Image 1 (cartoon, rainbow, N blue to C red):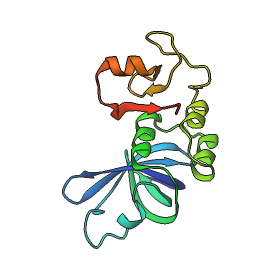
Image 2: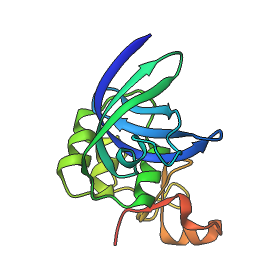
Image 3: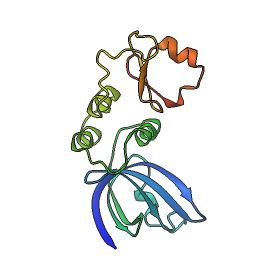
Image 4: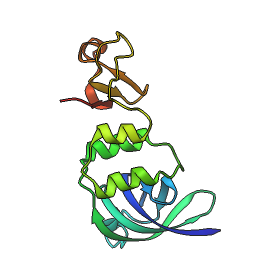
Length: 166
């Protein structure tokens, strides 16, 4: 059993079992981690207040085949909307540290254009993958750029789309 300590941004939380919670964290040392926190849904939980989405916390976890959070201490918050935190969770690969992305998320104003550029999808000069026109959206599930017309034609809600141009 290994023990690790790292700074992490809480991207997402969801119930797991009767009193546990599963968290998606983007950590400075390890990249995106999925970890369980035992009894964190209980009213007397000392972890729950330190692990809200958007929180930056010093997190201690153990690896027993899967990550389990044993301690956390909130240090600050990032100015990123809950929807953008969910998009980041969907977009980031597991266990791939990215120091440049960590700096962007914790020290700079949040910008999808900069985030996508850091992750390898530079929106400058991007064209729609369906028609070749100037792209204004990034479609997360297929990781491709789309224009306004093609997004409308797809007839889907915009829950998986990031607007890259205003």
